[in-house]
Length: 511
Image (cartoon, rainbow, N blue to C red; front, side, top):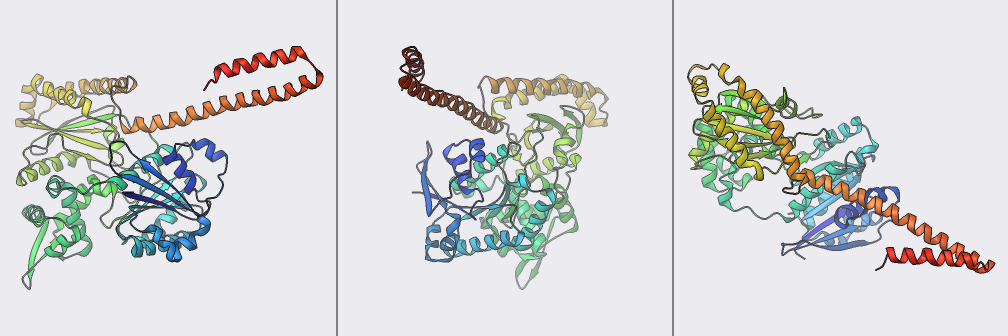
């Protein structure tokens, strides 16, 4: 067995139900309706995935025997585990939740220090927002410094099931992820820069050697990033006893904390300290394609094209129900992209076209042209590959059709001649969304969002088939009862009817 996933948690928290739904394809509605028998000892299964040479072992540990798993020599079952899934009923007391997590952390430290922990605060449909806020505050207070742990709020109720499904996709990706080659790190400029700044901000001042040790990145990459940060007056270096000590300038604090941090994939997915608490799912539908900024190469926005008025502000400007998130200043995004393009040249990256960022509520793709940069925004689950050339060519044609108006905008700042582009672009975005949906319907393409929908449809199909078969079984039961009656009463005509019904049923369900 190459990979190992362990489910652990208090009795009745929902471990086995989650395992059966997401690893064995059981129907969520049925499992919610009928309580499962408790697990005794441990149940295990091997998950074999196509095109992957590694198997995944799934271990479900009985909640009634947690003392055995967490406090005796049998904790050795955690040895060499890749992912530990801790399932806790969110209705439990905060002290109980924190204490259970503490026990799991102790086991990880002794048995499998390289494993990643997901804590699923499960059944959030049973509690209010205040309870969730209290748990979040308690977790932050107790475990903000703990690395390689993520806290998720989950439920199997209809309004939460697709998001919970997404979480399990991420969990499996974490289980199967490979080591990224060092060369590949050179292209992750934004996150790597923000990681450096986040560490400096937390430590106030820190040596370059300590930065390299904390990030475990090549020295050449650290030097490249620090040189650029210093040149832009975001980081300053002082020398103490021959050591380079790094600290943020006031400009660096403002620029990175207010602009770059909310755009960072690292910030939206996993915090620098390794501890992440994800909000309960926000269910509003995000359009496939939302809009775009057109800017010059200095990051000056010339105009924006939106699916509807204020669409970018609605879906990108802030993340709902998150008190801690800093709102994004949309006008600064093109400036950020321009700075990134110039920064990329220092790392010998010739062109950022096709570069993308993905967060919990947006996906951003950059299209580069000779004099302009288009920053295109879409639903984070969208598969842009089938329409990428279509989008690129649309803006290329726009720049050619309105060449003089764009030249005038660059030289004089007057954009009156470009106003038709806004209305034209809105209609084009509507058509792009419609054509994308048609491609989905015709199965020409597929994306993550529609995979979630398909999963829900499978659940509905399972339910309908189950109902149909249940009705058929009831018919057979009734026929058996009637058969006994007909035999007792010596009713030949009734026997003939029962025989005919049995024949028809047999034809419909031939194996």
